[in-house]
Image (cartoon, rainbow over all chains, first blue to last red; front, top):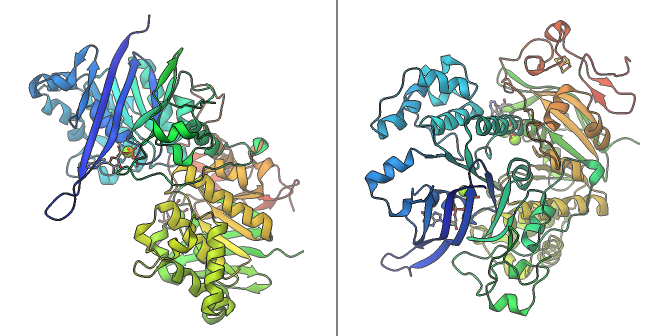
Length: 315
Length: 321
Ligand SMILES: Nc1ncnc2c1ncn2[C@@H]1O[C@H](COP(=O)(O)OP(=O)(O)OP(=O)(O)O)[C@@H](O)[C@H]1O
Ligand SMILES: Nc1ncnc2c1ncn2[C@@H]1O[C@H](COP(=O)(O)OP(=O)(O)OP(=O)(O)O)[C@@H](O)[C@H]1O
Ligand code: SF4
Ligand SMILES: [Mg+2]
Ligand SMILES: [Mg+2]
């Protein structure tokens, strides 16, 4: 039987912008009622366009920010209900790799210090040879221990980001677009590194990306988000999309095969402002299958054998 | 037929650094040429060299020729070059904000191009602007024409920049990563618009991108740059089917495709060298799985391939002309 490691229930985050003396305060829902289960040793991908709430979801799952409502359970423990002290203990079991390898490492610390830092936060003694082992694990030379982030290339920094995430031997890692700022040549190396680390340590990943081709290669299941909500969960990377938005994403993904050229059928229209969402389906304004009901009601996410879709007129 | 654009052995220096070394390319009317390579390989410098904009970053063409419709752009002088820019070729930069004036209305910024280059009256220019905006699928062109840049989304701004590049009715468009900062669905829209223009109007398009998927789907020819030199230049199908240069093969091997087994992405070890640290011989040799002593000693010449195109690798099966 597969075992759920992470369970997300009704997770919601609202942000308030503006306010102040004169401006009218506006609120927007960056993540809306997300339900999600991740099994042990699974790689679940989250895709969607800029601003759809991927990083907010990641930060909620890590409890780097507080949810407006909903829960996150790690191996049964509700981490949204933990006190700061018990949360710190739970944090040993989960880690995050950030999108930007340039800003996510403190330029004042050496690589050895950066890798030791999680132990300092946990008030734990770092076992001997940890830095050496970690550098080796992520394929970097030992000489790098005494260097500083600015002396490293983007790909090397991202390896350090991964090493730092691994240092406390977590079970679960959130990867927020870990290769988005890197060349494909480096991306390919990082993806294969992540994949071999998963096999070696039995890791579970939540992998965030806007690159559907990459997610289809790397992930076991795919969650598609549009404007804060899950619109589809594909049980297998090869499943045919049923939501018109997923289908449009797939059609916008340029396949690296000139023999399989397709006529593009890009989506019309613009993404609506998150401050001013339509009352019905958030995708209604761009959807080629839209009908009257779509503009009036929000389609519920309905699952059928692991394949969930939130659409009144699915494909 | 002479191509619309031909670069022969172009060298570009900034200060004492030689950053482009012997670039050769050709582009015909109605063709889409993709220019690819990792970050730092010299794609933007090539674009700036063609557009005559190198002085902006303190660079200059120090060798070779850039022929555009028979004229050598490196020899005609800044005044004539300025009259060609906008009128006969347009330039779309990666960041639309650098091309737009924040305090001028969108419509006026497009109008000025056709007034200047086509000699249109204010009224005729505005009609042309609205027509171009409609062709670029901008909803409610007359409303958008009255807006300021900050009121538009990134994808809209990029379409405005393309409208400006098209307003002088050019024969060539140079687009430097026109969609890198945009979402995939918007990217698809813009790439479709650009390539359609090329097919419908016989426009030549030099499309700079690091996305091999975009190249495979829309380009006719591909030029692969590595460390300031051309590695390979060929028609798109053969380059993907049977790349001649190990660097091209390695780049293609970095992209996940449907049905690929896990563990089959290879990546390319190491990094693109920077000027001053170029290895001798073939600049790709430290990262190349085929490198032999010859590669470390001798620069491979750019040689013609029997199937058309050219390649610079000692071990590629080229014609030994
Ligand atoms: N701290 C914050 N305060 C106010 N709004 C925020 C905050 N963080 C995020 N948002 C808003 O929430 C929405 C979702 O942002 P988020 O960063 O999660 O998107 P994303 O899917 O990660 O996008 P990208 O692909 O660009 O990284 C956006 O509209 C964003 O502007
Ligand atoms: N103004 C400059 N002064 C000095 N060196 C420069 C300058 N502009 C570019 N270079 C160098 O020239 C080389 C080629 O740069 P170029 O911008 O053409 O690369 P690119 O292929 O466009 O990369 P990217 O994909 O990152 O845009 C790089 O090594 C870069 O560091
Ligand atoms: S010349 Fe040698 S090093 Fe360069 S690409 Fe060819 S085989 Fe590799
Ligand atoms: Mg994000
Ligand atoms: Mg560039």
